[in-house]
Image 1 (cartoon, rainbow, N blue to C red):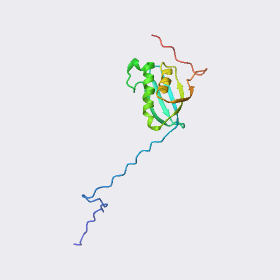
Image 2 (tube, one colour):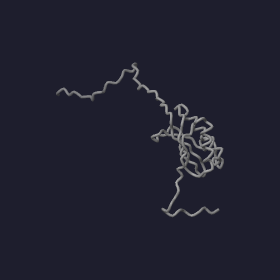
Image 3 (cartoon, rainbow, N blue to C red):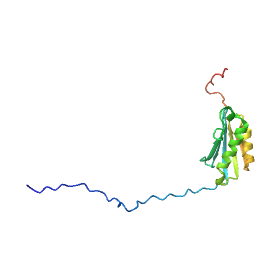
Image 4 (tube, rainbow, N blue to C red):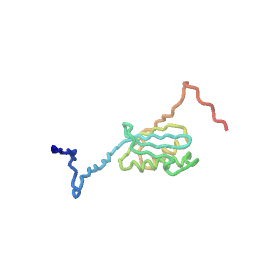
Length: 147
């Protein structure tokens, strides 16, 4: 019989058991400093959400009455909105924000107190803009809630 050689598939070079496999190095995240930012306050009926963005609209940090620790009907109080604004300011403090443009949307109870919370945390308010959507014509609105 003829000599038959069995061909084994080539095994790629694997690191030796004793050699340590190289781990990819983690790059340190560089915190950018922003002298000016935009704050969007959404004052809803049941919650108040405060969002910090850079001038292009990229979110830097946010907080809401619910994430500040308030639950149920206590979320829809002016005090909860003030605490949410102060918590959001603490989250974005490493960015070095000094002046902000405030945009308020909605007619909720925490509308004014959220702005006061921004003032008490030491930010300079450059402008306050009301962005509340007001319907003028368009589709028929839903029926009023009957209790």
